[in-house]
Image (cartoon, rainbow, N blue to C red; front, side, top):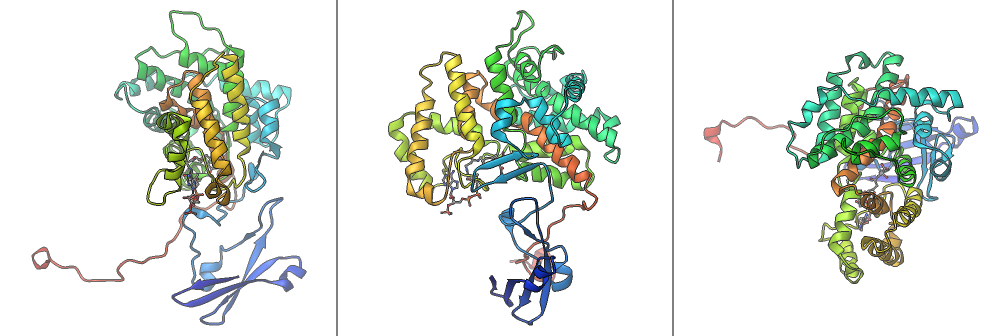
Length: 453
Ligand code: SDX
């Protein structure tokens, strides 16, 4: 492969057959300007693309690689989640997402992501007990909410309140202590539903609801969100199961933008609460976790199937910043396996709630049909992603659109903290410090203000 470099000639890359024969696959780079060659090892995973190990490239060649957006860059080694974007495969510790969504539950998936194996009966009981007994938040944390306006976006509240957890839990911020790392992990997984539900209650002026230890993780979240002190609350098994499945579908997803943010924040030694707050901030963007909220807004703006062609046209117009929210993915160039499960769950929830004429569903289904037939989307392999149907389910469950990304953050916390833990425990871990291609001024003298034009 020849990488054209307009400034210094060309770098040619070729497989190093001799190295391969010796069982140590490598590539050889030849600098077209000097003829110098550099050998770079090729590292093989258990599946997925091999990687060219460029850690010594700059030291030996004086070259950086250049990959804004990391479209061709592996930033770490991981055993947690594997995605095959072409085949539409998603595995958590080797288990397909479809099987976990159908047969497992969110607490089991949390244990699996954190520890690498599905729990035994006793391990699951112990884990659920640990999570259950960390669901309450420090009573003074409630005071933080009163500092926000009632119409503050729940994600703004989550960023602030989760970051503030490190001010309350000093006994679990020593990242060198495995015990403290695990307590911090349990606390974050356990408290996110409480914090998210409190953000919702605060926005509608209702009292905060304390968690109930006899409820499951998903039931507790629905209770703290929709329960009120003056009435008994009974779990709806169908909604609780759907909530639990939605949590599973959002739990982890390899090195996405927010997970990479958590890893980068953690690489400096920042405490886990601060790192998760950084992940929440990154997830909020409409190109990432904020897409579920943006899909609902888009479907409402389309308003009727007849207007779909107008929006599809806008999505294809390079001069229009509009994109079909819930479509496309950096990795999936096939149907997002989570979207398939989400679509099925959508039908189940609407059916169980007796919602026969959800106006947004036919618009979503027609938009999907048109897009999957349209050459622009087919050519670019743009398929519905995890965010396309989730909003319709959450709307049917009476969540306001503004809470959608907060639910994504709630569920993704286990993925973030598992990836953070893996990074901290990686003996080769270093602080993340990328370099750049500098194209600014190369040096000029200061000009006093009176001499400036
Ligand atoms: C999530 O990374 C993860 O794993 C994320 C996630 C997770 O679980 O953590 O899966 C969760 O974030 C899902 C994605 C949610 N975002 C959206 O639904 C927003 C809409 N989608 C796009 O913004 C976009 O598809 C991205 C951001 C998701 C991916 O962007 P890429 O990989 O940088 O792709 P690109 O912008 O280079 O697009 C390639 C082409 C471009 O056209 P050309 O320049 O080649 O002509 O496809 C076009 C884009 O304009 N394109 C779209 C489009 N998405 C891409 N055109 C219209 N509508 C879209 N949605």
